Image (tube, rainbow, N blue to C red; front, top):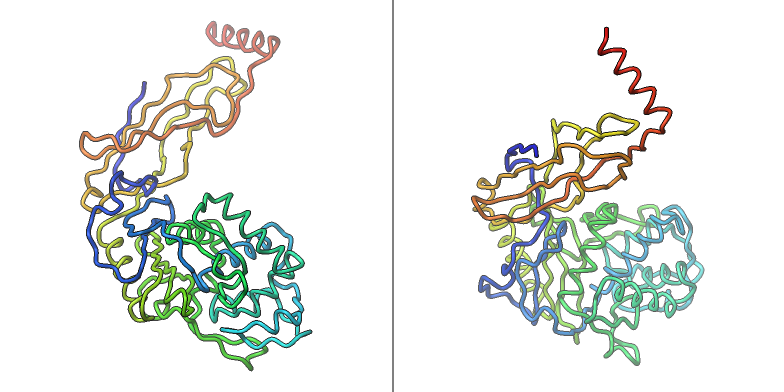
Length: 382
């Protein structure tokens, strides 16, 4: 086995340290709260995180997720034209005052949802993607199930609480963090909209101002969504990125918007002050020799792309060892395990990451093997 020592600077946040959630007592405003690392899903703090509560417009995190999935899958395009229905135009609460029959691009609709929490645009996009708001809500609940959001039931795409069954519209701080992470990690284009402080639609005639004040006043803020109704109180899923680590702080049921913003800032400050993410990179690693293969060696790559989440105090103590097989016999499959990268802090093993073949190597045919043997014999005589 071949062993190579690697420095900590090559690593990044792949795994959440056990027992970290709730390990520190923070006085966080609101009925529930949770702090999550985006790259790993590691929970850094939680309080009543699974209590089912009304989320108000934070609901639109799922609405935006389904819009981005439709865009990224090619079902719709940002340049597509969306026509507002009477139902969309009739939505109350935060809105851009769409008129029935008015048209707007998907991009401007999404911008209005992300920046100004436009209920009318959320409804118009729901109808554009699924045919009706009801059908879109079914997709929201299906996606929630796929993400393991067991605390969640959606009854509309806006979070408004004026419907007949609005009291059934519930989720939790945990589930909000889960869908926020999915949106940020797998659809980073959304941040082109969620980081806007002020902008316009309708060719500059209608102004938008972000309801998330942290976008302007918190260093590294990347989003994500505010919410308020009298039943839900003040809610926020706030995301920010610093030094290669992105966090999501969720607060539900705060008494005021100032209290909500301060609570999310407190959680984000705690996360950035106490944790770090490090990304493994393999450089100058020799190929593993392949016996009886059409290639004499196979390149090595990490079998997992996640990072490692560590206490900041541990960051400079991290080392890694690489153990590679001395050789492998063809055929070799792409992704076949051929070694291990062990991540340590001192003598404590934090993670063992598989090292795998970067490509497949076929086995030599008998005729090709015979030719190779003859060539080597001839070279030995020369």
